Length: 77
Image (cartoon, rainbow, N blue to C red):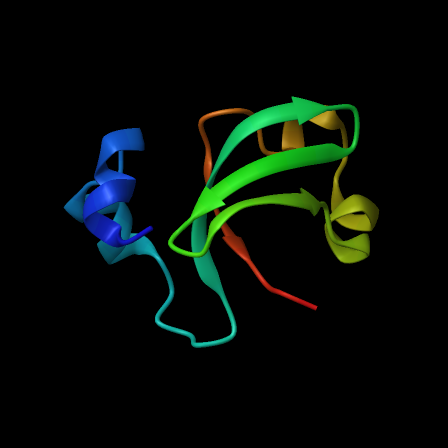
C-alpha cells in the first residue's frame, strides 16, 4: 500500500505535514479496536498494534488513548 492508497482511508496533506519526519515511525490509521488491541493500516499494509507502556503510564484516562479513525505514529519492534 502506498500513500495514494492511504488517501482512500482519509490521508490528506494536513495530516502528512503534521506527522514527524522520523524514519523510526510510520504513519498509520486505526481501523478497528478491541480492548487493548488495535488494527491499523499503513503503507506497509494492515497490522495489529498495542499502546506503548509509556503511553499507558502517562494516560490519565481512556480518553487519552487513540480511537478508531485516529492517525498515529507506529514503530515496528
